[in-house]
Image: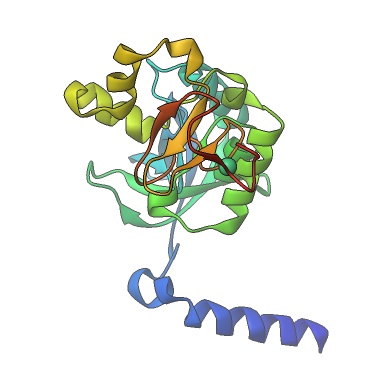
Length: 223
Ligand SMILES: [Zn+2]
Protein backbone atom coordinates (compact mmCIF):
# COMPACT_ATOMS: atom_id res chain seq x y z
CA UNK A 1 0.00 0.00 0.00
CA UNK A 2 2.79 2.32 0.91
CA UNK A 3 4.38 1.65 -2.47
CA UNK A 4 1.15 2.16 -4.33
CA UNK A 5 0.69 5.55 -2.66
CA UNK A 6 4.19 6.55 -3.67
CA UNK A 7 3.54 5.57 -7.26
CA UNK A 8 0.24 7.43 -7.34
CA UNK A 9 1.77 10.58 -5.89
CA UNK A 10 4.73 10.35 -8.24
CA UNK A 11 2.65 9.90 -11.37
CA UNK A 12 0.25 12.63 -10.30
CA UNK A 13 3.11 15.06 -9.79
CA UNK A 14 4.60 14.09 -13.15
CA UNK A 15 1.39 14.90 -14.94
CA UNK A 16 0.92 18.13 -13.03
CA UNK A 17 4.42 19.26 -13.86
CA UNK A 18 4.11 21.92 -16.56
CA UNK A 19 7.00 20.49 -18.56
CA UNK A 20 5.28 17.14 -18.90
CA UNK A 21 2.55 18.20 -21.28
CA UNK A 22 4.93 20.23 -23.40
CA UNK A 23 7.86 17.88 -23.76
CA UNK A 24 6.91 14.43 -22.44
CA UNK A 25 10.28 14.40 -20.71
CA UNK A 26 12.73 11.66 -21.55
CA UNK A 27 10.37 9.39 -23.44
CA UNK A 28 12.99 8.22 -25.93
CA UNK A 29 15.97 6.00 -25.30
CA UNK A 30 19.20 5.05 -26.99
CA UNK A 31 21.63 2.52 -25.65
CA UNK A 32 25.09 1.92 -26.96
CA UNK A 33 28.78 2.33 -26.49
CA UNK A 34 30.46 5.67 -25.88
CA UNK A 35 32.99 5.71 -28.73
CA UNK A 36 34.09 9.31 -28.31
CA UNK A 37 34.19 11.97 -25.63
CA UNK A 38 34.35 15.33 -27.39
CA UNK A 39 34.37 17.50 -24.27
CA UNK A 40 32.98 17.54 -20.75
CA UNK A 41 29.39 17.60 -21.93
CA UNK A 42 29.38 16.08 -25.42
CA UNK A 43 29.82 12.44 -26.44
CA UNK A 44 29.24 10.12 -29.41
CA UNK A 45 27.30 6.90 -28.84
CA UNK A 46 27.27 3.96 -31.24
CA UNK A 47 24.00 2.03 -30.99
CA UNK A 48 23.29 -1.66 -31.76
CA UNK A 49 22.43 -0.79 -35.36
CA UNK A 50 25.86 0.80 -35.76
CA UNK A 51 24.37 4.28 -35.90
CA UNK A 52 26.28 7.15 -34.33
CA UNK A 53 24.52 9.72 -32.18
CA UNK A 54 26.04 12.94 -30.96
CA UNK A 55 24.77 13.61 -27.46
CA UNK A 56 24.90 16.85 -25.51
CA UNK A 57 24.46 16.14 -21.80
CA UNK A 58 21.23 17.85 -20.74
CA UNK A 59 20.92 20.43 -17.96
CA UNK A 60 24.64 20.89 -17.40
CA UNK A 61 27.38 23.01 -18.95
CA UNK A 62 31.07 22.32 -18.60
CA UNK A 63 33.99 24.70 -19.22
CA UNK A 64 35.02 25.05 -22.85
CA UNK A 65 38.27 23.36 -23.82
CA UNK A 66 40.01 26.75 -24.01
CA UNK A 67 38.76 27.63 -20.51
CA UNK A 68 40.35 26.67 -17.22
CA UNK A 69 39.30 23.13 -16.25
CA UNK A 70 37.95 22.37 -19.74
CA UNK A 71 40.40 19.51 -20.23
CA UNK A 72 39.89 18.19 -16.72
CA UNK A 73 36.13 18.13 -17.27
CA UNK A 74 36.63 16.12 -20.45
CA UNK A 75 38.97 13.75 -18.66
CA UNK A 76 36.52 13.28 -15.80
CA UNK A 77 33.73 12.37 -18.24
CA UNK A 78 36.04 10.01 -20.18
CA UNK A 79 37.03 8.18 -17.03
CA UNK A 80 33.39 7.63 -16.19
CA UNK A 81 31.98 6.38 -19.50
CA UNK A 82 34.44 6.12 -22.39
CA UNK A 83 34.15 2.64 -23.94
CA UNK A 84 31.18 1.83 -21.70
CA UNK A 85 27.65 0.88 -22.61
CA UNK A 86 25.30 3.65 -21.52
CA UNK A 87 21.62 4.44 -21.75
CA UNK A 88 20.63 7.87 -23.01
CA UNK A 89 17.16 9.17 -22.14
CA UNK A 90 16.01 12.17 -24.13
CA UNK A 91 13.25 14.08 -25.85
CA UNK A 92 14.82 17.14 -27.32
CA UNK A 93 17.50 18.18 -29.75
CA UNK A 94 19.52 21.35 -29.37
CA UNK A 95 19.99 23.89 -32.15
CA UNK A 96 23.05 21.99 -33.43
CA UNK A 97 20.91 18.89 -33.87
CA UNK A 98 22.53 17.11 -30.99
CA UNK A 99 20.40 14.96 -28.76
CA UNK A 100 19.93 16.53 -25.33
CA UNK A 101 20.24 13.50 -23.11
CA UNK A 102 20.58 12.20 -19.60
CA UNK A 103 23.27 9.54 -19.44
CA UNK A 104 22.83 6.52 -17.22
CA UNK A 105 25.62 4.08 -16.59
CA UNK A 106 25.64 1.32 -14.01
CA UNK A 107 22.74 2.89 -12.12
CA UNK A 108 24.47 6.26 -11.98
CA UNK A 109 23.22 9.49 -13.51
CA UNK A 110 26.34 10.89 -15.13
CA UNK A 111 24.99 14.42 -15.72
CA UNK A 112 24.45 14.80 -11.98
CA UNK A 113 27.83 13.33 -11.10
CA UNK A 114 29.58 15.92 -13.25
CA UNK A 115 27.91 18.71 -11.25
CA UNK A 116 28.38 16.96 -7.90
CA UNK A 117 32.10 16.63 -8.50
CA UNK A 118 32.58 20.22 -9.60
CA UNK A 119 33.21 19.58 -13.32
CA UNK A 120 30.02 21.18 -14.55
CA UNK A 121 27.64 24.03 -13.88
CA UNK A 122 23.95 23.45 -13.48
CA UNK A 123 22.61 24.98 -16.73
CA UNK A 124 19.93 27.10 -15.03
CA UNK A 125 18.72 28.75 -18.18
CA UNK A 126 17.48 25.38 -19.41
CA UNK A 127 16.87 23.49 -16.18
CA UNK A 128 15.06 24.14 -12.93
CA UNK A 129 16.16 20.85 -11.37
CA UNK A 130 16.58 21.58 -7.68
CA UNK A 131 18.79 18.57 -7.08
CA UNK A 132 21.25 19.88 -9.64
CA UNK A 133 21.11 23.37 -8.12
CA UNK A 134 21.88 21.84 -4.71
CA UNK A 135 24.67 19.70 -6.12
CA UNK A 136 26.28 22.78 -7.60
CA UNK A 137 25.96 24.66 -4.30
CA UNK A 138 27.68 21.81 -2.46
CA UNK A 139 30.49 21.55 -5.00
CA UNK A 140 31.06 25.31 -4.77
CA UNK A 141 31.18 25.24 -0.98
CA UNK A 142 33.64 22.35 -0.99
CA UNK A 143 35.75 24.02 -3.72
CA UNK A 144 35.62 20.86 -5.83
CA UNK A 145 36.99 20.75 -9.38
CA UNK A 146 36.50 24.02 -11.22
CA UNK A 147 35.30 25.75 -8.06
CA UNK A 148 38.85 25.57 -6.82
CA UNK A 149 39.84 27.92 -9.64
CA UNK A 150 40.07 31.69 -9.50
CA UNK A 151 36.85 33.43 -10.56
CA UNK A 152 35.21 30.63 -12.53
CA UNK A 153 33.41 32.08 -15.55
CA UNK A 154 30.21 30.32 -16.63
CA UNK A 155 30.79 28.65 -20.02
CA UNK A 156 27.73 30.35 -21.52
CA UNK A 157 29.23 33.72 -20.60
CA UNK A 158 32.62 32.70 -21.87
CA UNK A 159 31.17 31.65 -25.23
CA UNK A 160 29.33 34.93 -25.41
CA UNK A 161 32.47 36.93 -24.64
CA UNK A 162 34.57 35.13 -27.24
CA UNK A 163 31.86 35.77 -29.84
CA UNK A 164 31.54 39.47 -29.09
CA UNK A 165 34.29 40.91 -26.94
CA UNK A 166 32.84 44.41 -26.73
CA UNK A 167 29.72 43.00 -25.18
CA UNK A 168 31.39 41.08 -22.40
CA UNK A 169 30.94 42.42 -18.89
CA UNK A 170 33.95 40.63 -17.45
CA UNK A 171 36.27 41.69 -20.27
CA UNK A 172 35.24 45.32 -19.93
CA UNK A 173 35.93 45.20 -16.23
CA UNK A 174 39.30 43.55 -16.62
CA UNK A 175 40.48 46.55 -18.60
CA UNK A 176 39.67 48.92 -15.76
CA UNK A 177 40.62 46.91 -12.67
CA UNK A 178 43.43 44.55 -11.69
CA UNK A 179 42.07 41.06 -12.41
CA UNK A 180 43.29 39.77 -9.05
CA UNK A 181 41.15 42.26 -7.13
CA UNK A 182 37.91 41.11 -8.80
CA UNK A 183 37.17 38.41 -6.28
CA UNK A 184 33.42 39.03 -5.94
CA UNK A 185 30.33 39.29 -8.05
CA UNK A 186 28.12 42.37 -7.85
CA UNK A 187 24.51 42.01 -8.94
CA UNK A 188 24.09 45.43 -10.54
CA UNK A 189 20.31 44.98 -10.50
CA UNK A 190 19.98 44.53 -6.74
CA UNK A 191 23.34 45.86 -5.52
CA UNK A 192 24.06 42.59 -3.68
CA UNK A 193 27.60 41.21 -3.55
CA UNK A 194 28.42 37.47 -3.68
CA UNK A 195 31.61 35.56 -3.04
CA UNK A 196 32.82 32.87 -5.44
CA UNK A 197 31.35 30.01 -3.43
CA UNK A 198 27.85 31.45 -3.86
CA UNK A 199 25.54 29.98 -6.50
CA UNK A 200 24.85 33.49 -7.75
CA UNK A 201 28.50 34.26 -8.43
CA UNK A 202 28.74 35.18 -12.15
CA UNK A 203 25.17 34.06 -12.41
CA UNK A 204 22.74 36.94 -12.15
CA UNK A 205 20.80 38.56 -14.95
CA UNK A 206 22.77 41.76 -14.51
CA UNK A 207 26.12 41.97 -12.82
CA UNK A 208 29.87 42.35 -12.96
CA UNK A 209 33.02 41.20 -11.26
CA UNK A 210 33.86 43.48 -8.34
CA UNK A 211 36.11 43.92 -5.34
CA UNK A 212 35.24 42.73 -1.81
CA UNK A 213 33.76 46.11 -0.81
CA UNK A 214 31.26 46.75 -3.58
CA UNK A 215 27.52 46.73 -2.85
CA UNK A 216 26.01 45.04 0.19
CA UNK A 217 26.79 41.49 1.29
CA UNK A 218 24.55 38.61 0.25
CA UNK A 219 22.60 37.17 3.17
CA UNK A 220 23.37 33.65 1.99
CA UNK A 221 27.08 33.61 1.27
CA UNK A 222 28.11 36.62 3.36
CA UNK A 223 29.40 38.47 0.28
ZN1 LIG B 1 25.67 35.13 -2.30
